[in-house]
Structures are given as C-alpha cells and as structure tokens.
Image 1 (cartoon, helix red, strand yellow):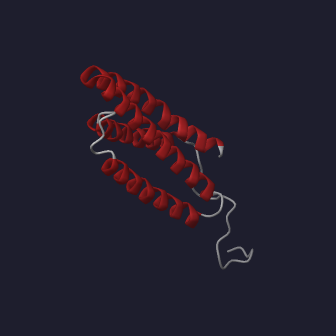
Image 2 (tube, helix red, strand yellow):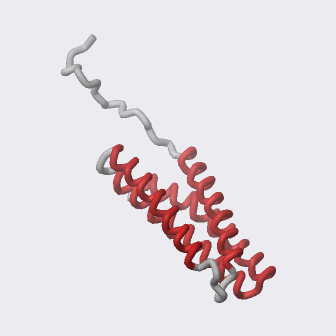
Image 3 (cartoon, one colour):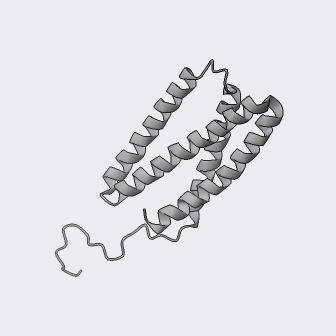
Length: 142
C-alpha cells in the first residue's frame, strides 16, 4: 500500500471509529448490552469491508487502471452480497440487536464514504502523467 492509500485509509477510518463509538454508546443506552453488541459488530463489518476494498483497489492500481476498476466493482458487489447475506442470516438474532446493527452499518458507511472522499480531495496527486507520450508520435515534435 502506498503512502497516499494510507492517508485515505486514515481519513476514512478515524471519523468512522469515532462515529462507531458514539453509535455503540447510544445503542447501549437505548437497547442495553444487546444494542451495544449489535452496533459494535456493525462498526467492525463496515471497517473490515471498506479496508479490504481499499486494499484490493490499491493493489490493483499498481497493475493497471482497468484492473483497478475491476477490483473496485468486484469488491463493491461482494460487499453488497455479503452484507445482504449477513442481514438475512442474522435477521432473527437474539444475542444482539439487529436494528442497532443495521443502523450502525448505515451511519458508518456514510461516514466512511464521506471520509474517503474528503481524503481523496486533500491528496496532492497528479492525475495526468507529465512525462507521458502521446500514442502515434514516435518522438517527433510538432
């Protein structure tokens, strides 16, 4: 993982952890231990999903832009599928509060997305290769 990727990860993970902590406290206050456990699991799921996704995209970016897009789309669909399976499987869970889990996942996902976007906007990255060559020109000058 490159330094830019780590900065983006920090820009998203730190606010999400703070929002997740608040969600766990609120869920504990409203639903007790089961609510806190559900919210805690929600924070963990969001952090794990998005960290894996960012890592996969960062690795694929070193290969090619096409692979980066494929990794982004693949991890996006995998996250949606796994989250749907988790929600369906744990719908009637009695060990923890599924409502606290669901609401925490939604809030932390929004927070992570905003943090990641903010991290991208603060990067000082060139999006054009200044040394790049134009296809079809073999070193000739115009």
